Length: 254
View 1: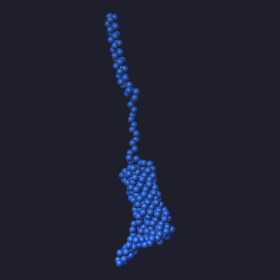
View 2 (view 1 turned 180 degrees about the vertical axis):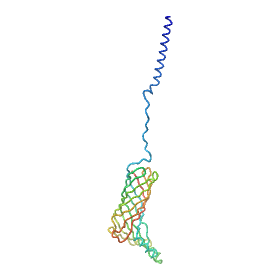
View 3 (view 1 turned 30 degrees about the horizontal axis):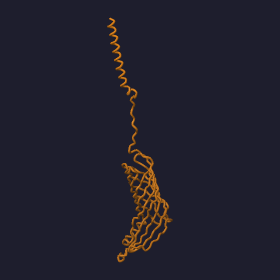
View 4 (view 1 turned 45 degrees about the vertical axis):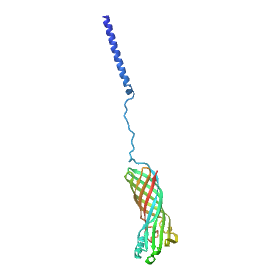
């Protein structure tokens, strides 16, 4: 009887020891997970390509092609028709260069004030209206060489990433205005003189500006626009003429 009891006690002890070892092994296997409880995963907010950037500054430069429009110029053209094309009007080339700031207003829109030096004016070319003198190719050219500081405030609206339309008002402050008269024949220049006529023109010219452009990711951009002058250029109201300017520009935004 004592042997049976001892055997039973030993069997119970062995079973208890086996169970304890199994539980300990299970706890050891679960330990790495128990010490690092699961935590919710949060992803950082991703900035989309359409997110509004900050204020950008830039440089802009390019070519101008300018002219005058108005009663005075039209009268000259009427006279040119009467004398069989003795006087013709040509576009005057020039350039512009300056600074700007692009201020975001929200997704797809920005306001862009700026300031630039801009050459404008008009050019009239006269020839002798007599066929017997055509071989001389005699020409008289009068060119209004106007220089302004343009200060536009433009609203930009993006049609697609990079492609935008722009428009807005512009005030232009007259820096100088000289008329250059040249005469020549057979390809040779025989006469040239400049007249300073700044005091005969308005100091400030107002216009509306519009156009389109494309801004590349690297900072470079291209644009083309048109300045439609609203003010009569003659401050004494002797004639009516307004500036008309086509601009093609290259820009870089920082």
